[in-house]
Length: 186
Image (cartoon, rainbow, N blue to C red):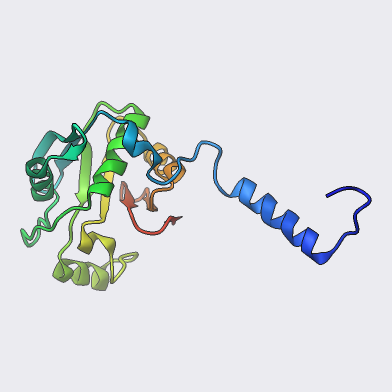
């Protein structure tokens, strides 16, 4: 806008939208899914705190996902209460794998919750605050984790900066929720 141009409602709204857009995401935010093509391999190291089981595996290399490794990850992330398994969304694995690299962590993710059966989710919804009755955990699109060599706030901030889905912060319970649904945080 030039100083001699008349100030109209439209120019004020445009300026406001431009200001909001320029401050809405941190400068270090990652475009949704932009990082996925640059990695030669993608690996994960997970430890399920409820079953004591761990896995350290390369689940993507040479341009494709390793279906056996993805099945092994789904087993580690199964609903430990019912032993039910569900296919885990590969994009969720990509997000947490990339986060691990960004954080420079040398420890496995400690998994508090991966897949949840509808029965488990309903039980948790009835007995716990903050459980969504239609949780993305039931669709293999969410995980609750922590890293022993990084603070929860670092994990939260990294996940939020990546802007790949939902991020829930539960410091009293000692975990961060990460999902590949709509970008939001709580």
